[in-house]
Length: 333
Image (cartoon, rainbow, N blue to C red):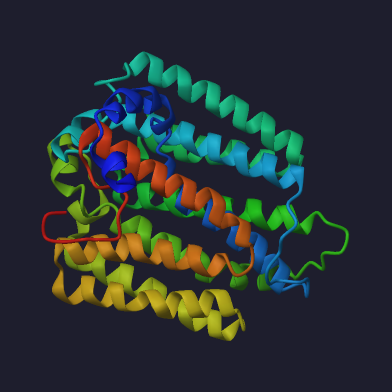
């Protein structure tokens, strides 16, 4: 009875339009944002001999940084939606911007979110505010806004995503490294510790360009797969998590090695079968796997993950009759 009410009752059609501005922020993309910050925090603990399992303490400063970075990321996601109106329409991804929320209002929301997010990170940990501001500049301005619009350039667009992943990881690392009991590794060691996570992030970021090829081509965007082809894109996306596994073993990093070896089969299927459903699985499942292993270090991460997942399912079903997010990937997706 409860399931039927949640799925079919007409009252929900009246409720969900009030959530439009919340979902303008693309909260499902926070799964990648949060996990990269948490991995930065977790590996900082692992490699400085701090307790690294089942951390149940949450400081207000850390919470402010997480909220702030989420808002900054959301601002960048809104700018991306504004600039992708034409291609998203072709890719059947145009939900809110320009349709239910005007371009002008969307841009104003992005500006407010960016400013608020940077202020929150400044209050939480002033060092992270520098990285947060740079994140917005890269992911929001350089990636989306003219005259730059690096998302339309195959290498530059991918590099922006990679460096954004590095900044997210670095923000998590800074949260731990500014504590008095932290023992800092050398620069070379830090680089090798970081690489497996950046490889995983870079691989998924590259794959996300494949489902959008049709719309990107119609919009004149020279994304990576349009320039180098589907085969090269899938090959690189496969090599990166393999490299992450090897480096994770070399670094004696249980998170990087275990998460990457668990995710590799999805990249294998995507590489050799090349089906759309395999590509979608190689995007969604590794993110879930990395979040799953992150919970062993920070169990409280489960709270925002579960709330975001089920609230998003509720919203997208009743607003657009779309089963999203979902782990079920079939030929219709």
